[in-house]
Image (cartoon, rainbow, N blue to C red):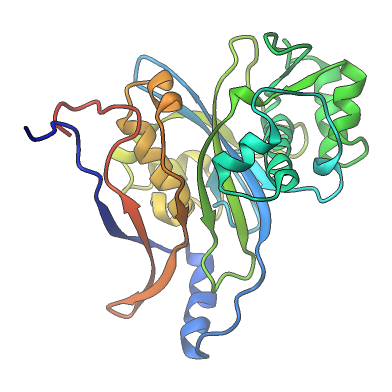
Length: 311
């Protein structure tokens, strides 16, 4: 009897480049292929919550031609010192995380996880940490909390020092691995990024980092995807490099692809509990009728059930 489940198919997708990347892309073609710059390790967290309009995710503006996209999920590069320091740890072991992420180096896997939780804390104030394996710290709106975020962001205090001061350990069980994305070879700044997902804790609310954050908001994934060909998201962020641009031009293939999966899922629990194969994505620069575009091979099946019967 044939299966009623959606077939797992691979398809090649094309994504437009942000305007500020076009010069580098054309130079890559004009001068022939060169040795790509070595990517820096990075982590990014897809924070999600359920709402009456469907599953929402927290997106923010990133300046300076970030490899994560001008509008992206919270994230950033691994701190080669602080993210490798010992910290109290609850949830899957570093060895288990390495297995889930397809890594042989347990310490490297551990650093990706620490960086993910640290970057989420710096950029949103959400802290996935508790005093034991079943508790989660409350707060996020106090002056002390903001000062702690700024101290970590400006490297005045390391993240492990903060956790030690507050008597907290990382709740790594609240993170779910999603995928690995490599920046295209032509890019001047390249990341090797591990994406994770986490549900918004009931006792915490995200907020901009004082004096540093520009724009961030909860956005319905389905709405963003439905309006992807318009400039609605770019206009909402209202920045010089986002106004009048569509989703592909203000984000990255990683962000757009993940948003598609969130939009197709039956809520947070279904999305977080979905068992994903380990996938590595490496967008390739191609010319389409003389225009540089990014080509990515993706899976067509939804993650976490489909909102549409038979999809």
